[in-house]
Image (cartoon, rainbow, N blue to C red; front, side, top):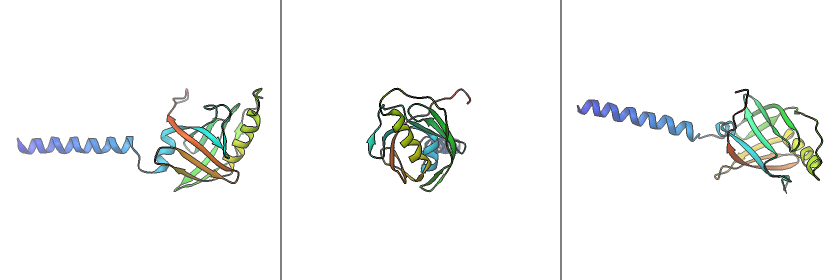
Length: 146
């Protein structure tokens, strides 16, 4: 009976360890792809319409909303270094003042990304030649193609 109880306790502990590894990844590479990101500021300026500039990582690609248009492109990242390849985007115009300029600045900064850090409070900062893009993490959105 004691051996059976020890075995059951070991199995429970093993399952708990697996669960914590999945829900609380240790390294930034896992955290980048496990949630989506919403930009709070671009090159030191607050986002014109919060929630409209987003970033997602999936299978070697980034995608999201630039404010008006959808974008996507290749990405490589490891140990704090990040390189975003050429981005493609839709070409809709936005009537809101400043939104097109913000989108242009955002896509330019993202495409020139060099480094990333994830803060203790779960925020993401991407450093580029154009300055910093600061994001907050949000739960992963389910897309129709998944």
